[in-house]
Length: 296
Image (cartoon, rainbow, N blue to C red; front, top):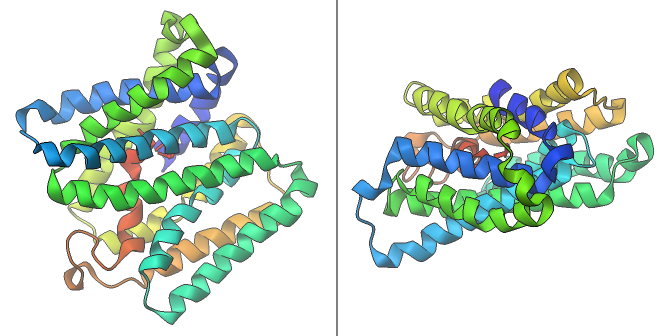
């Protein structure tokens, strides 16, 4: 989480040079190259019928990253990540059969209402930025649903192909925003740092952790990400939150942690996540920040 949010804060320093669109394009392109080198997907023969699913998976990844960076132009990092968590929570709600989960969702909804009704007055939050963050959450939700299907049908190598699709999809937006500046050698060290911090390093760490820790515990810990994002924004970008905004962020964190901790154990679920979507959501989401989300 420190790596992911540090990468997101670093990415914001690229905005003056290439804009949010250019930053998303650079991150996705460099992340795709790193993932291609690591997974070497050309060694695996993929059935033609699987390509539409992988392409849709990549488009959800690209859309999530682009929308997340667009949101960072006008709203603080911590609030953007908190709003983005609506995507995983929605997946958990749609897959839930426990009454307690709906109470957690109500708590998250209360946090969102605090941001939307009082956040704009307290911190001049941009409505468009908030909508971009919610759109990133929708992309995160699609990434989770599609990623589970792709992982079962194709395997982890599909992530490298999806990342390439995402980079190709977002590149035109980056070129339209930044033009030739997108290929400036001076930007490469920072852009590579963003790709490593937001994608390569955290993904490698999580793959290692998930072999030693139950997904449910992992997901509960990862629910703290909006807090890490807010602290990263404060430390590296000077973004302060009001008491009301901190209350909203904490409400979303508690809702995510509660619904994840109450999920069924992996042994009772089908596949990696099965019937415990909230627990497997964060685990599946991190490559998305290639999320992002940072962000992702």
